[in-house]
Length: 79
Image 1 (cartoon, one colour):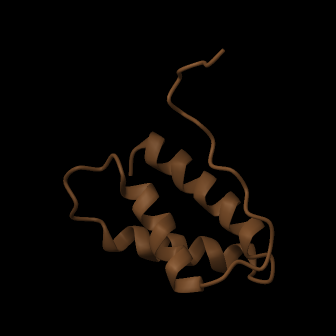
Image 2 (cartoon, one colour; image 1 turned 90 degrees about the horizontal axis):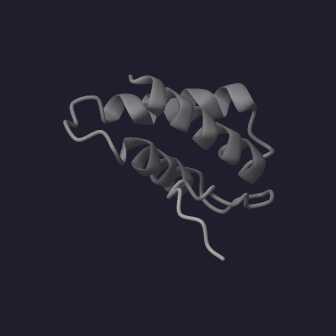
C-alpha cells in the first residue's frame, strides 16, 4: 500500500464512520481493509480507494448518519 492509498483509505474510513454511526469504527476499518485486500492484484491503483468505498457502501446499505462531502482534490480553484 502506498502512502497516498493509506491516506485515502483513512479518509474513506472517516467518511464511513459519519455515514454509519451505529457501526463501531474498528469494525468499519476492518471491513474497509478486507475489501481493500480483494483489490490486491489490481495493477492500476488510482481508483482503488474509491472502489473500496463504493463496495463497502453497497455492502452496508442505507446510511444511518450524515453524508459527508467528498473533498475536491482536483486542485482547480473556481471563482
